[in-house]
Length: 172
Image 1 (tube, helix red, strand yellow):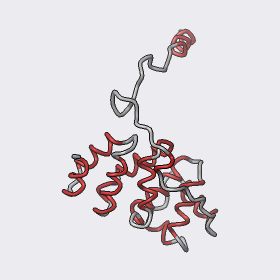
Image 2 (cartoon, helix red, strand yellow; image 1 turned 180 degrees about the vertical axis):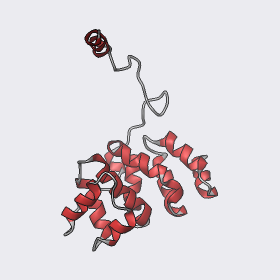
Image 3 (cartoon, rainbow, N blue to C red; image 1 turned 45 degrees about the vertical axis):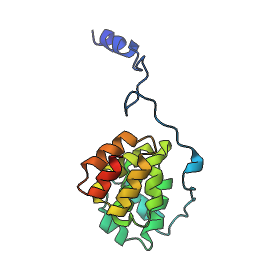
Image 4 (cartoon, helix red, strand yellow; image 1 turned 120 degrees about the horizontal axis):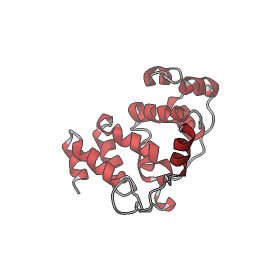
């Protein structure tokens, strides 16, 4: 009986037959690579091995402690976001630390994350952290996100924000 149930479940087509777009009924807008800031290949920091180990732990080191242990936190965390592929949460935690502690310095990175379709996970995380960004950075990130594939999510995040300037951008 179990074999038959498993066979029936495996035979079902898991792909929806109608087009499915998570943001709504319309296909996502296309973002040209020419519209995005250039990617810069980061250089590995001297603490690359220790940073990789700290970020790879399932319950990663808090951002404050992580940054305190780095000679130059911004380039090191940028390197981690760009190069650490496994485990998947390692780069995401590095991006979270960049967003929370160094958003003013990495605004170009944040705006790229919310616009580049290939970096959708980073963009979603950035929009989730929108209330914790400074107002000028939050406005720039929201403006950038409204021109990309995460426009619906960005609009909702902006309208839910406590700051009037951010809400105004989201209401446009």
